[in-house]
Amino acid sequence: MRLATALYLIVGVINVYAQFVDDAMINQFTKPVLMPILIYLVFVKADGFVNLARLLLSLALIFAWVGDMLLLVKGDELFFLGGLGSFLVMQLLYTVVFHKSMDNPSIPKNNIIIPAIIGFVAIAYASYIYAGEMWLPVTIYAGCILTMLVFALNRNGETNSKSYLMTTLGAGLFVISDSLIGIDKFMADVPYAPFLIMLTYIPAQYLIMQGVMIHEKN
Image (cartoon, rainbow, N blue to C red; front, side, top):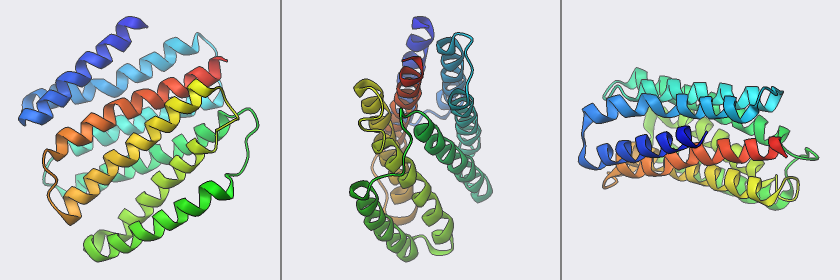
């Protein structure tokens, strides 16, 4: 388990370095390895006990891997949309996983939903202004990732503090990572965008996996 965690860290650091120096070859070799390592960690941490939350977590990571592979193809709108679709399914699966990994699953509270709705309206407006023909899928995707964050925040008090902190931090980093993708593609060039995107994406995936598995173990 420690070896796999160390391997994820090493491969992640190498990939982030590849983004920083814009080395496509290193990126092609390292990015496909990341999600399979996390899937393996779920398998090991499960220790033979399989339930719905763990199955959905593994499935979410599989869709994340598919999205990673599609987004490796640069300059093709069809592959970009395919990657967006794969990550959308992953976000929906994470939402269900967060809901299931609570001591007493409940509907998100108003103090969480209301700010999320305000944020969604702002993003929808920005998408309409800047994303052109892509504004609808971008808005739908933004709604899904905000819903995932809402359900991560909703676990407060319904799981142990370590699980809550890790999943919420992971979901927050995911929002930052995907926001950078949207801003860089539709609004303005973000300096070192691929570097910043992977710098947030790689720990986001690990923190979500670890946080969910800590709850399930307890």
